[in-house]
Length: 89
Image (cartoon, rainbow, N blue to C red; front, side, top):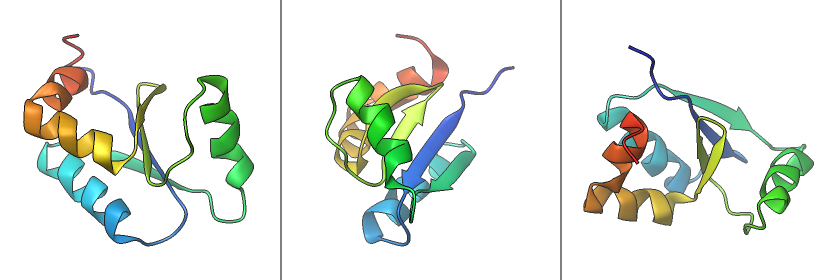
């Protein structure tokens, strides 16, 4: 079974970053954490390419930009996150 690649961009420790990591781990997914401290251009280039606001932490699924913790939490509560992680949509 191929697992969805989950990448969480962060700029150090924050409550939202910790909550995003916990939410994804509870869903059973390994999260690749990439710290952008000192390298903010990495995330800025990614998000400018899709015309999205730069918020941290930021989560990408299989190289598709998803959003920050607010989007992740909303999707989790609605059941949409499970569909995205299983690639059902």
